Image (cartoon, rainbow, N blue to C red; front, top):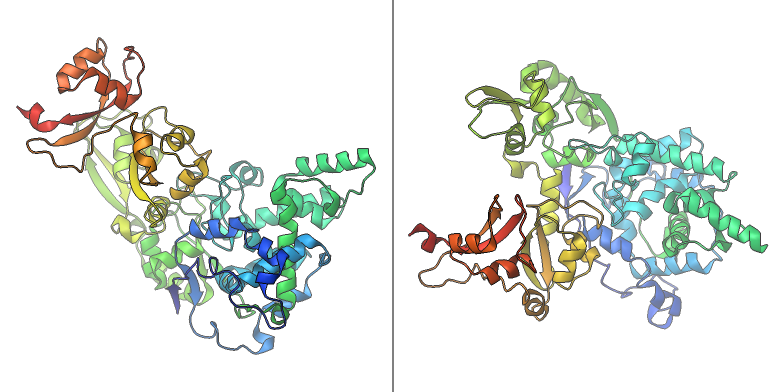
Length: 546
């Protein structure tokens, strides 16, 4: 049986060095340990951005003792190949950080349980260092839905371009950067390429995995020109990269001798957990969960590449399932009629509707509707009917779709006052962040996005502001308080498209507002308007109705 258990992700990350490993000095008197308190802000940020459940296994695992021969960790240790670097201050600083956060290793090693055996098998088949099985701890804290400020996604944190370079498909339905099997294949391909590129030096290969081979190569050439050593430890690299390799070497030291360092590794059985199950075509993930006797969330956690309520209609047509569930799934699938893999809705086209409107309504894509109805163009006629694939269950039952994950992040309670902001045409993260006196990085993180992600008009962002800062930032706009009840008034926010021949005066007259109000609400300095331009208006609908 499998279950979902919620880890208290931030527990311990804020606790300081309250408990120390036996025989270790108190961190309050250890300058290196004190410095290490702030050494890994990425870890806290990564876990903060993924307030999702973790998949674990009931039964023989958990905190109960294992026979040593059944545990996977000795096998991990046997394949270690990297130089220790324990005399390097940078490695020691990260070890000190873990002394201050001794719960982190137990938590992240537990999170690795569904994936670790598969990754270790892949490394051994390629004769690669098994320390690389710890790299997803550095990259993503083994959170399959981790998404960084640099637009990197998945256990191995591929950015979009590098993912495409190594064959990871990315579209509305599916993101191969989060596919456990495909992203592991791509990551190991990339690391082997880098290992060869840097003449068999694994530390340089790892640095290049973080910073790119071009940056590392340029750092080597600079040192060559100065007559300096060109090993990793002597290169002038970005700060994040200079910490990247020491983080992995510190994890190696912890796994090598957890008792010495006062940490606990989650006991994981040395046996396969996952298997790839082929599908006959696109399948609703709720249907897949029913056939496998699993929760829908469990299906997503093993198949985090699927962004929506169903698998990609263009493939891959497969799922990762626990081995113990595969037989039950195969048996049930063989009995299921093909037309029940996905539910279909007969939709009557209304006047003014487009395929885009219909696709958005049913949470699918225009291309899927066109293919399902054998349409050669996007032209449709009111009164005709379309067959549209739809989710079998309510949206909330698919809690780990891209939209639901983002909503979960936006709903995390934070300090300050919560503001919901609707993105306007031409808005950027920088504009909005400046308006509300927050950083671009904060604004993106609060909304499960990266600063370079595209904003679309109509998107809703959550902003957390200090009360003292709000009047200063909103004074220039002086927006009406829609929550404030004014006798005889009902204010509503409207989006108005400027028409040919419109002027500020005509629009103000039409909606019974002032020209200066429209200018303030939309940050318009003059009187020039363009047809099609969108204006935000705050109008009294009781006045309009009269």
